[in-house]
Length: 84
Image (cartoon, rainbow, N blue to C red; front, side, top):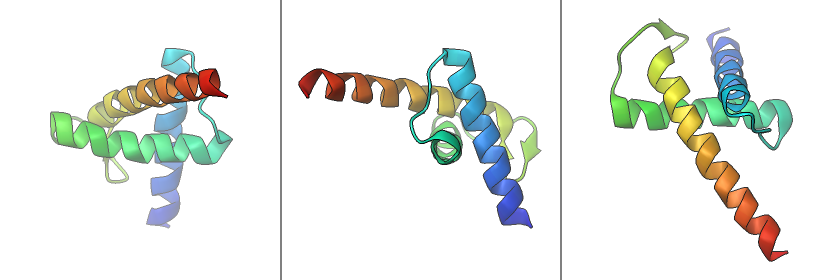
C-alpha cells in the first residue's frame, strides 16, 4: 500500500510542477510520477529534508525540485525539437 501511495503522491507533485510552469510533461501520468520522484530527490539534495512529510516526500523541497526538473526537461525537449 505504501508503494501505491508513493506513486500517487509523486504523480501529484509532478502534475503540480507542470501546472505551475504551464508545461506539459511528456509521458502523461508516468511522466508526472517520474517528475515528482526525481524532483523530490533533487529537492532533497539541494534543500534538505524540511517541511511537511507525506508518503516519504518532504512536500516543499519535492515541489521545488520538480519545478527545477521540469524546467531542465523542457529545455532539453526544446533543443531536441530544433535538431530534428
